[in-house]
Amino acid sequence: MSEIKPIPNDYVTVKGFYGVINQGTNYAIVNIHTGETLAHNISSFLDCVKTIDYLLESVQPPPPPEQKIKNFDVKPDVQRLIEKYAPETVRVDKSVNFLSQSSYKCYDALGNVLGRVRGSTSNRYWQYGGLDSEKCT
Image (cartoon, rainbow, N blue to C red; front, side, top):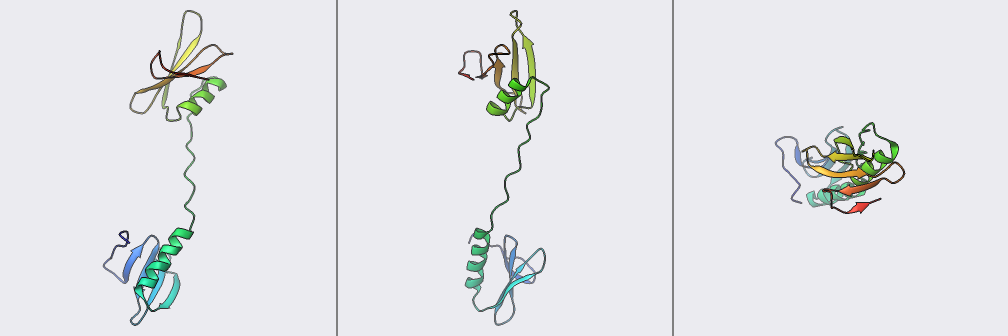
């Protein structure tokens, strides 16, 4: 009930998309965005609040937005490891060692190193943080 807030207009109270209007001897529940009356002639304010609670609990929340992973213009196996182990990656730096093996260092929005994709094309793996960190395939 702490979410119920009085507002200075026709509504007695508002919770979510629903408002309670005092109609003199009784109350009505309305959708505050559309103005549609959902129920009227309710004798108790507490019944209105309980009904609004029921309406809010029975409505399924929308699914969270899909987190779109940026394509870093890397090979598909490297992209797959980045998506799996560091979806918050915003920048990838590629380096090649003397054995012609590529290493892809992944950074977050603050510039922190999230980890690296290492290994040859046929044997790529994810390594968290520093060079001596845990290896994941």
